[in-house]
Length: 339
Image (cartoon, rainbow, N blue to C red; front, side, top):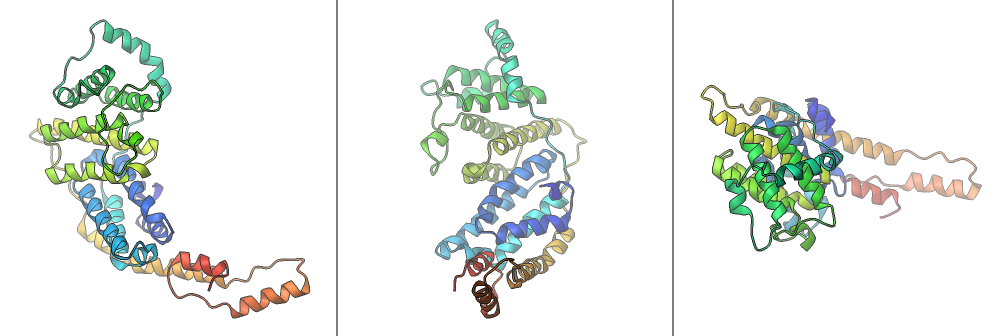
């Protein structure tokens, strides 16, 4: 994350390759790159990355299925390595705009009583179009309608700090026992508890806003939400919050730019720079393999061994055959004494 935020191509590609070479690294990388996009790139409106990463995840999962679930086949496939390298290079070269500082849960609790008093006194924002379409009178608690209206009004009127406040408040409510009832909106494949998260109410409101405001192309809007569906179980609480905040800010920003006739579109990263980064990817994996082989070939020096144990250790070191694969899992199995 630090390497991508600093625009360091070499280190970014090296750490991404380390993920690919690790046992469960590709699954972690799916969610991590989406979080990095939200933290540094999503608010700049650099187009195309969510669609690209969504297609590449589908490609990698297709290879996984065809291999019979053999992760070694997936991570040693050149097209998988190129797909990861392409998406990492895109993030490195894209214009950066870090997310604003998010309010904390303590801030929400501190302002909660004053906010309730204002709303009870009739100081609310009134019904908003998207919230009115999404809120379900049969299944959703009344508090959700109020939060949705306040959040949507803040987004439509360019009140970014207030908009982020409602995102954090909703996520805080999601972790409490007295969380308001909510309709199941999560995609199939999630647990019942995950499907009934109140955050899916916010996702549904954002989906409706994307359709209404045309903040994204239909393909890109669908990819952003599909990435949420695919990576939800792997996203941390902070990652979910940051991604929802980034999408909200980008919708608000695009709505503002649509009113301006002078705002130029944000260009995509240069193709030449991405090609140059991807051309060096084989050398990075070769370097990782070389380091792994050197690690295995080194004989540990352990003091105070008996003569018999020392002779056995020497014999094992002399007869050990190094694997030729770049697969780190094979190396680990070899170190453990496997054949």
